[in-house]
Amino acid sequence: MSSDFEDKIWDKNEIISRDERQQLQLNRLRESLKQAKKVPFYKERLKSIEPEDIKDLADLRKLPITTKADLRSQYPLNMLAVDRSEVSRIHGSSGTTGKPTFVAYTENDVKIWSNLCARFLTAGGLRSHHLAHIAFGLGLFTGGFGLHFGINTVGAGIIPVSAGNTKRQVMLLNDLAAEALICTPSYALNIAEVARELGMDSAKLPLKYGFFGGEMWTDDMCRKIEDELGIFASNNYGLSEVIGPGVSGDCKYRSGMHIQEDHFIVECLDPDTLEPVAEGEKGELVFTSLTKEAMPIIRYRTRDISSLDYSPCQCGRTTTRMTRVLGRSDDMLIIRGVNVFPSQIEEALLKVEGTSAHYLIIVDRPDNLDKVTLRVEMLPEIFSDKMNDMQKFRDKIRQEVQTITQIGVNVEIVSPQTLERSVGKAVRVIDNRK
Amino acid sequence: MKIKQVSIFLENKPGHLNHASKVIADAGINLVTLSLSDTEQFGILRIIVKDWQQAEKILLDAGFVVKVTDVIAAEVDDTPGGLHKILNVIENSEINIEYMYAYTVKRDNKAVLMFRFDDADQALTILEKGGISIISPDILFAD
Image 1 (cartoon, each protein chain N blue to C red):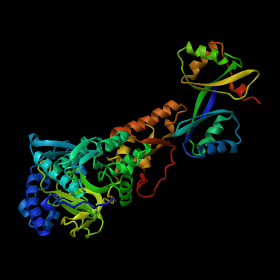
Image 2 (cartoon, helix red, strand yellow; image 1 turned 60 degrees about the horizontal axis):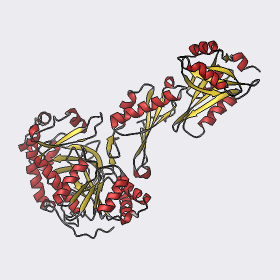
Image 3 (tube, helix red, strand yellow; image 1 turned 90 degrees about the vertical axis):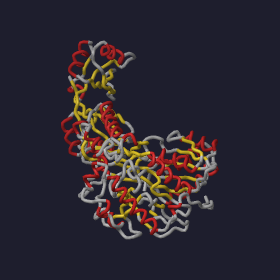
Image 4 (cartoon, chains in turn yellow, blue; image 1 turned 90 degrees about the horizontal axis):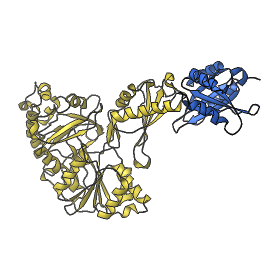
């Protein structure tokens, strides 16, 4: 599908000069530090640094890193920098302990977030006369409501379908003739496939634009989606801890996602040394929020691996661009949009008598939907000649994993000592999706 | 008399059943009867052999997960209603059949059924009281 739509810039801050933007960032960074210090956690962390100590942007590196574990330790809402009464919205991301990590927004935060989503929606082709079909789950997940309000800000019409029931999604896409589709890239392929199963030519659906995010995908997958749905597909990036979707997004040239630097400072660091890597080199993205009121965040380690390009884009935007996420600097898996850590599987297995610490997670994407097989070594003493007992054992594993990770897995019980033992770091995951 | 049954865990992978049967064959052990129960993810092979201690040992040595349990071999007339007669006795008692399978060789117009009960001793008493003929290992493994 062509990208021959007319380009449009949503916000003048996308095209201001780098110098101008850096001055804005510096001023806002000092304000953001002031705001962060209203949080007891940051007050302690930042006690040796005052906003005035930040003389230029390089001083950012004097500030401590914030990790996911830090945020978890402040469960549920101890990272709030405003009074509870000021909170306009709460979202959450799946955590490693079965409890989400909550993020909060003031009314102004929601306004800024909506504007950020409007920027990439506009850059990717959405216009006010379009209808947009949201197939992201509308709930605590930031994807659904983030895009919802972004579409609203653009002035386009919203069809809030939410996730699931793919046949119905296809029917609505066909009958309501939405121009834009919002979902994960793998779900877009799933929709195309179901449309074909229903005897339709998926490329002939009225869709013209797709805005995809929430999981790692490749250029090949992007082309496939475009072919199968006959659309222009753009990538958008974000994470709830930073704000949600809208941290960055593609323009029509798709030569890297534009990072909204008037609201965030991005760093690309070596995950081991936390030293900056050179432009174009792969590193872990670290974000600092500049304007968030409810939950300011300082140097948040995303664990997402990408690389940066500081040069201006042919679209006219002057913002730094990031490549699509190339990997993770930890072992987190994203399964159907849910963050899953192998340590959670371990935690679940510990609750089931008769399992050992030896397991293997195998992730596949048959029919464009993530499928997880968990291979678990059993202890000999749990073996029973009664099928019923064995099935109960298997079901107990499945239930515990579901409780902790919120994902359904297919459990395969194997004999003791059969999973490969590695000398160094144990291989816990085989991800066949890449 | 109770019979010792050797159960073997089978992973759902090609050749696993074959491997178990080879280990048994290589040791020169004759299978009197067997039953195989499986799901998509795994299976359970249950065998009746004369020298169950040897079978258990060689299978454990070969890396299999093995469990030995008591089963009861009951004899019924190989005529219509033969099974029904045993089930009637069981139904009127407090015991439950976990599973059962048939012994594959007929003896003198009689059929032999292998029963797995949770409490084999209690089941034995009830079956004997109900007039069911129980086969001892001596007879089962004769010749």
